[in-house]
Image 1 (cartoon, helix red, strand yellow):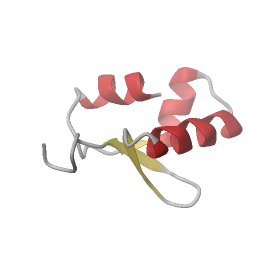
Image 2: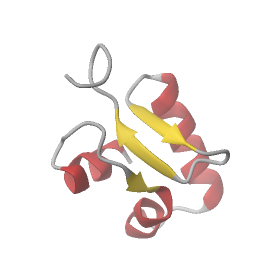
Image 3: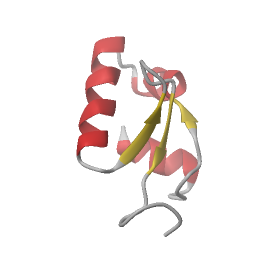
Length: 66
């Protein structure tokens, strides 16, 4: 999932991507998407918006804007 978000955003931080679009490209079901988003958030790689998440963006190392 991280690789797909990086590809779509060109590796830029704070560029929001719709979770449904990522799921379609990667052929993931809802449970797999939720697990991937949760794991990426826990590792500090993504920021998710919504409950359940509807969009994600890359988190810059050390915070936003880097």
